[in-house]
Image (cartoon, rainbow over all chains, first blue to last red; front, side):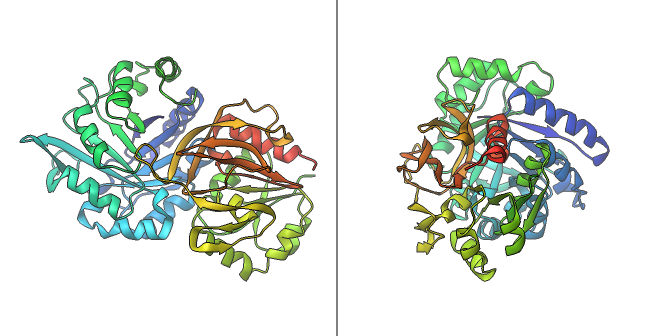
Length: 240
Length: 199
């Protein structure tokens, strides 16, 4: 499975979002993640009409991440056609939100995003990562948080390895493999993709269920059809 | 003329399903009205969530006898597939009993987390108009924790920790465990085949 993210800041560029979504759909992306990365730090209300437009356009699943702080937010996004919602900072502020969302909508709808950084021979969770000024340590060990969110009903975990983010030197396979060992739900790797070999390595070495990338796809540096052919030739079981 | 009725069994995946038919140029009525359902040329039984909630909703709307009496093409999707069968192990719920079989919890193994979420290769085992033109081994998008075992009613199957029924059919009823509305072109093919099916 290949997943990719689309960052955007306001609805004026929804047209661009739709063009990009259609491009990825036609190129064979298996799932799209839409990050409203400024939603949590700014504590603002989000105009979500774009979710309906995206849902009408796409014939593949998509996830909305960012700005979901309540059952009502999640219901709004799911009713507009999103297949899953992804929560990150609000789950750290109120872990019970995961439990409530899973109970109300089913674990399959509830993705928990975790921003994690290597420190002192361990890994720690960070919050408010959408805004560099506000990013702070969440005072939680990543492996502990991975266990807790599953116990609370997370149906999928996206692990964003911050040390690798934007570096394009490959996914953090050591950290992802450690998380894989304590993660019984689907695990999606995020952060660090720069070459097609990185995708192969993360599927082989960390046994993740999906690999998420943004910039290498936006720039068309790695064309999706070519990447998927390469992975299939290397015996990764994905859809062509 | 195609008059498509979508039975409102609760759950949140209705929008994407309606959009999928919209892309095929077919409008759909989302309804629990027995007359609308009976008069439709095609009926959809979708469903996301728990089997018990969905059966309660169908019972409350007095739809159980209505669905059983339908003779036009009926497509169950995901939980809707399980509802068409006899029982679900989820809360041990009695379902519609139209297609033999009991939905069972998917076995959990280290390599196969549950829910099964993602694209699975799907093997077509029996020719059927609904799978016409669908490549054997085509990938479809699945999101489920329960599944029907492979049986004589199975048209196509997939494998998680073990094999399970991906598409089943009996008379005018057909059902898919995957989400055709989120399964790219292969899924759209299933939906358009369904609209042309004359059981």
